[in-house]
Amino acid sequence: MSDLQNMADLVSTGNQLLDDIRGGAISRMAHEHQTQQAEFKSEHDAIVQQQTAAGDAKIDEINDYIANGRDKQTHVRLSKNQALLPNPTNDFPNLWSTGYVKRATLLETVSTQTQERTPLAREFLAAINSDQYYFAGKFNIWEIEIYPNRRGEQSHLLAYFLNQYVRYSQHVTVAAVVKHVSGVVPDGSFCTGLQEKQSAKLVGTYVPISTKRNHYDYFSAYVRGENLAETETTVIQIALPAVVTGYVDLSQGAWGQFPFIGDGAYD
Figure 1 (cartoon, rainbow, N blue to C red):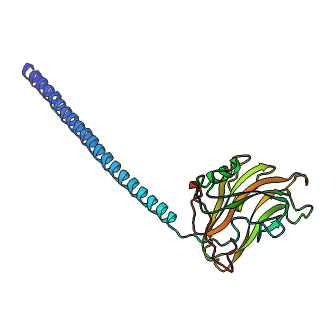
Figure 2: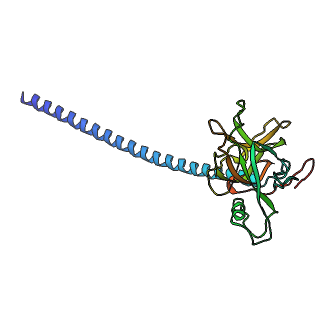
Figure 3: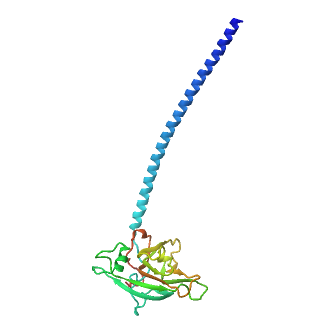
């Protein structure tokens, strides 16, 4: 019995040794697997970072190309009298329709080649990066007072003003330098983005024409007049409104007096 017992102990000890050996091998294999996983993840992350950086660089290159391409476009004015020269009676800009305007006052003419400029003139010039001795040419600043609604005509409660018939040719940008003085802030068209009682600012919008090149529009901003007293008017000051072909980056103040090609050049 003693020999049998010794053999049994040896077998038990051998099994334990085998289990320890197997466990050690498994542990080593697990460690090696984890190490390989960590190395693979590190290599994968490095590749992803490289590809992301390359992709971001390419996107920046494309955005720069688009921005430069837009800036190099030729812009032709479709609307008339951007300088807002007065009509024969001097009570409204020539060739522009009044809409629901209560009063229009020519505030001043902003001229080039002079140091004698009012703070208002310099404010309007600064909005288009032109507050300097020379710029493209003189223009007028008008103050316009607008009714808040169509005075009882319930079919249309929006007071549009200073509008003009324009034929489409391609995608267009419509904008102006505008300052809100009082009343409800106008919006739409050349007043898109206008803020209440801020300094004069270049505001407007881009209009995609798509397939409607043989169409037209009456471009005009408007005052929402719902539920307002008829005596509560809006007052703004405005200069250089126009509709021009193509995309103009208004965020850069990229605006000026664009050339007009049409039935007749009036300014």
